Length: 111
Ligand code: FES
Image (cartoon, rainbow, N blue to C red; front, top):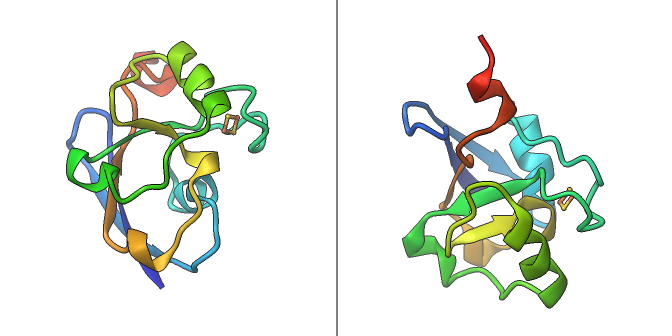
């Protein structure tokens, strides 16, 4: 099992989970109750699966494809360590990965 840590947009809530190798990070996040819509189901057409990878973990991820980079350019609150969770497949090399939810998610603006 691969350990993954999800941090809320404001940093106030941390959820640690474990998931099987080979799963997409988007799926793992949704299973852990994270607010990622993933509307296009991994087709790189929506950017609603945008997450911010912890700076110290970013280099462990395989590079983003050009298509992914293009989508990230459109994502709200994207940073230099932003990625699309649907494009990240869990491997042993990613054990202990920490990602943060992006700011300005719809749930954050509601009452
Ligand atoms: Fe749409 Fe990842 S689910 S880009």
